[in-house]
Length: 422
Ligand code: HEM
Figure 1 (cartoon, rainbow, N blue to C red):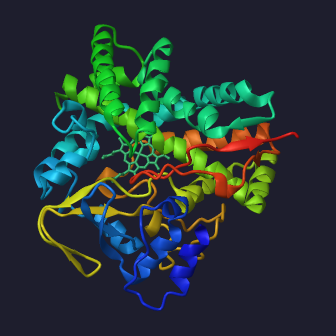
Figure 2 (figure 1 turned 90 degrees about the horizontal axis):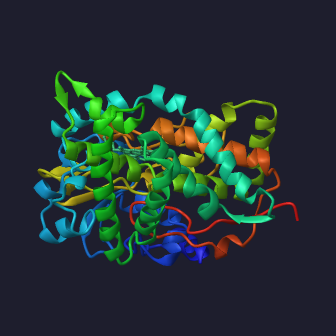
Figure 3 (figure 1 turned 180 degrees about the vertical axis):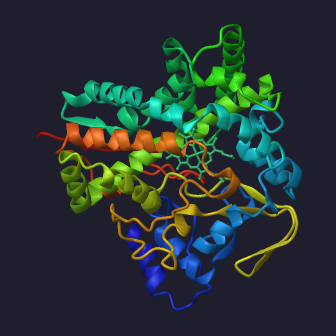
């Protein structure tokens, strides 16, 4: 299990023997392997489980620089060297489809234009005004299991909250939200596995969003979807396809990420009773400062996005002294960068009051997470409300019995069984 990596890191005299990546042990605890890579092979070419060869960037300074490097393109159509890689990046059957021409797959100037338009609709003000609804959603979810003595916090709490929240914000009517919940579940369940169901779910989502846009156009409201349709920049508007792709990326960039922030965050708190007690004391005293720094620390310590999404070299580039040829894929390993001892004091220690904490959990540069204010609101509300209402929450299984999803980009638990009051 976990110990094997630790030994191979510390007792291994020969630095040429890199740890095996993408195994079950690695999915459970990738951090010892990342420590080895940062030290011995900071920019490391490896073969991914999909068969694609890619460069992993693991040091903080290199990662930050790579995320802001305009020579690394986000568009797999234009720049990937191999048809093989092109075929495996993104959603099967959707490579050329409209939904995939979203922010995370495009470069300036297209990216600049779309990001400007969406920023006019998806404002921090809109997110702040949404806080009471997030509290209500959180309380409703807890109400459903509070009278029992056990729950699975992934399925009953972390999973439904973000999907209902983003559906509400977009203006998807309540009676349609359970369809979205099912489609989203299909996408998560199949993440990394057989993906036939995913293509079907995406088709349904596309048809639904097209219809929703038609309905909103006919009667604009106060929701985000209506504002996306209205948004204009010097007379420029989103086309119908662009609005649909934008709604799609908001739904899916904001979904599994937030599930995992709540899940990984709760798990880290349950494993660190001292830090958790500190947070509960602060919350009892009405002090929300530790909650704010704490959620940032949970993002750094075990964040939901293990690697930033695909980038491709548009020309030969050198990162951390390593030459990368034109067309080659680059994966920036946020989880490794955020534990770099060159940047963070005691990086493997969870310290909720850490303030020197410029982590890369939300990315960096022009693709920096558009939804960070919403993610913070949801995670802070979820953690604070749950700890206040069920203060004696405990893990119901041994940590070794928990299973991680083991996808490439995302890091999160399959289940988080907890118990209380017994
Ligand atoms: C981009 C993380 C929640 C919308 C990103 C990126 C990261 C990230 C690392 C950059 C990816 C890259 O450069 O390859 C997270 C985390 C979240 C979260 C850790 C939750 C804890 C959300 C939410 C939304 C959202 C709630 C929206 C509702 C987006 C969008 C982008 C993005 C639209 C693309 C921005 C662009 O390309 O310009 N996010 N995200 N995210 N995120 Fe988030």
